[in-house]
Image 1 (cartoon, rainbow, N blue to C red):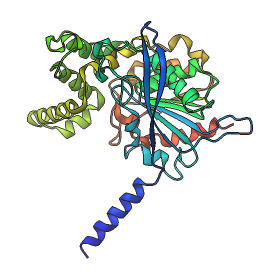
Image 2: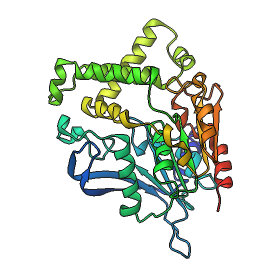
Image 3: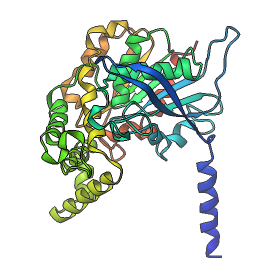
Image 4: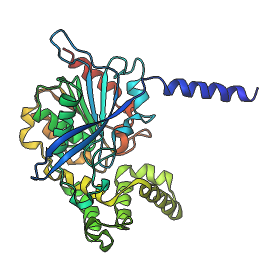
Length: 353
């Protein structure tokens, strides 16, 4: 009898995990991809996951494609987490994968897509956000035959990509939802923490111009900056209320990051944001757009007032800042879908054609 509740729990967990179709993974190869830097790769690999099946109307236009792009140092795999996928892709959820065709790519330099650590190290082309968006567009159109998107959304770096999508391909999508981002170039504290990590790696003798045999210790500084900026002070204090506990938590975070992290990949990912500035062209965005940030986001703090000011320039734009609560996770609130999925439902309804 004591095992019965455990059995029920296991059955419920399996059912919950299987509440949406299993993702399919594959690679799309772009031949002779030219970067805006003037560099090129004979083959650029874009790894991706898909859930669901594309549907077309009588004119052959795809009606149910959803592109979701990830943040700096992340990958499309992060959207299969328990706080995201079941909340959005499950049966009856806003992006029910039996109704939508969901595409989760790994950006250039990230995940299983082509990246410096594959072998080129610091000889890898210096990619930027505009290169990443172009590769995403070609994945959809050339690789998957998607000629229209029901929704383009993204988190953090992916949120910034979403703003660019709205400007570069204004007629391609029905709706846009950038999360944890601002529609202006990276500056102030956001630039400062990135520059701090970049400088730590580039000025580290152990980096050896990118040709190190073991990870340089400056990657530790990069990981520590991610720990510092990714959550909110209330959570960090609760998780580590003493000096000793904080040191243990930080060391554990860094040790875990070192298991898979790479200094060149990290460096390139941070430097990729150098060309990001959607601000001059916000009026080009014509699709309904809902921007969602959180009040406890240290990377995009609401006191700057940038989002509230610039959203007025987007013809069909709306912005929401989620208040601090025991459910928010600072910058990481972008992947806690329960916080904002009701707003996603409203966006989908308002943009339905």
